[in-house]
Length: 111
Length: 114
Image 1 (cartoon, each protein chain N blue to C red):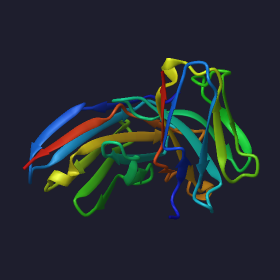
Image 2: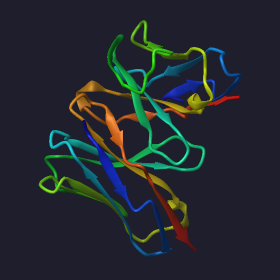
Image 3: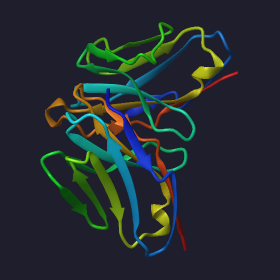
């Protein structure tokens, strides 16, 4: 079955710097890759996603890239702000439409 | 509120008791998923429904766990004879099959088994 690995587990950046989180997946049949942001005690919130027919997608300060050949995808946050501090999860949708999540990255943006 | 809702938000129970959680998905969504999340980990898939049919169950789901979605709308997750290891956040998510993705999560039910 699908397996998703996520790095780093923690990331500390200065406000205004960029942050990059990387994930790899194992099942070449996976074709949908969402990213979720989870603040302490709250539900995971979908912030951006990408499908396998696209290599990159941007939404304001957030972008996701996908390399199908290497089976990895990344989240890029530019001009980070303190409110970006949270745990970020990547996920891959397997052939039976369920999400397999990475283990999460705790992002801290220092003011 | 038109998002996914879950009740109760918190449940404290003693080991050996049965508990039941409810999830109300976004009204036009026909897929409903249950996940379990422990501290510091990503959500783990438990089971999912398309309309009223339960299409897949994780190997994580022991026979003490049962889920239903009787009319293809809300769903319930029951845990019988709870164990301390069942303590976790139980998350529900829903999606529309036509988009094959975009799962939206509820606020979760935090279960503590004493």
